[in-house]
Length: 288
Length: 312
Image (cartoon, rainbow over all chains, first blue to last red; front, side):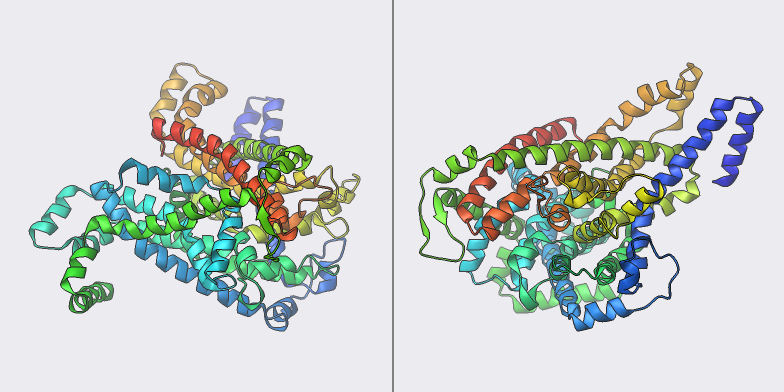
């Protein structure tokens, strides 16, 4: 980056064009500021989580300090947030597996045989545009009757509203890209439909499977509104008690940011190892 | 290797244990569509019908005896009070402002990264830009509530350092919604950047060479070559950003709770508070149905357009 800058600066100085040189500096300064705007907040979350409460409450930011794990200790163990993190892990993993198991055959069927046609397709797509809050009042009564309120099962089912549509959509699109010859060959060899799915389709669309699992997990892990309404007490998933931490008069910002860091941790790891799948998944496969 | 033998074992197990009639049935590809579609219908169709039922009832969440036929009372109450319109306006303001900033800023950043940053840095920036959008909404809300905090927040520190007046930000009716917009811009501009960047990387250099030969300057190259070619990408970004913006809940709930004095009471938060704080599910449902009606129009327009132009 810097060598390019020097070259360009030299090129512009050679033409003795003052506005052009100033323009270059302005552009670069702006670029650095924009970069800081996006990066600094993440750094600030992690930094604050290693501070004492007093340091986190200082009106002038404390840049140099001895890192301490006090906030993590207090949040995870004294406030027993660890249990909620485990709830979150359970809900996220269970939902991801459920979504995968029921969406993969459906996506295969829709992709290869156009099962359900345009109607099924549009119905699934339209759910991506449904604001969750509009179904919540009615779902609350429905789940109350089924005695599911306050259990992890409620969330595992509810997150399907958002995770199944994009999973089915992506699987369908991926299956459509597989040459029909491959399927035909498998069937000539006597493979059943299920075997064709498992041995022909699955190996071909493995990256899409990873993408679906990744995004399903991250969605469930991050979700707040359904968790707030449908779970409470010890059954609550991690975001709920974390949100409640700022309602009191005395806010422990270092603990709040420790919680945010913990929420960021698995997501960062997953993102780091598979960032090419995420954009594709989030846009229903419209972006390669 | 091990997964392959695992899969084989699975198939054998299924074969041994499931009776042949049932197996035939389960092996039918038409049946495969039933579980997800059935589950989705159960989670959306029934609630939708029940939602309509709720709108005609007084329905107290906690007290079963306070549930009775309300006729059109919920509708008249909502349509006559200013609260619903206020929320509708705020949601509209939020969607238009946040999405516009995200598209313009996202496009600018993507162009800068594409033209000014060497290829080898690209994946580094890609990872950096993925982080805000993968951060839990609640963590984003908490982060910006802390940054915008009136007494200990970093933003007021910057304002003091620059010799500017400090504000209460999230606690000030004039700035509360703006703080949520900033948080949303922080989280989702990267989404636009990544989509546009993907589009730019797919453009052949030859287009630019031709444009250059034709004597097009930088602006003309952008206006007549780049922009038309990445228009589908911008449209995709627009659709998904609008769909996510009108449902905004978490950030508002964490940062301002819809306050102060309803100045950031977007629709989702309004419905939540009516339903679960005030315990009036009938009112919440009615507001939900009205919101759904408006959004159906917006969403269908976008989906139709997207299907027609073939971007989805």
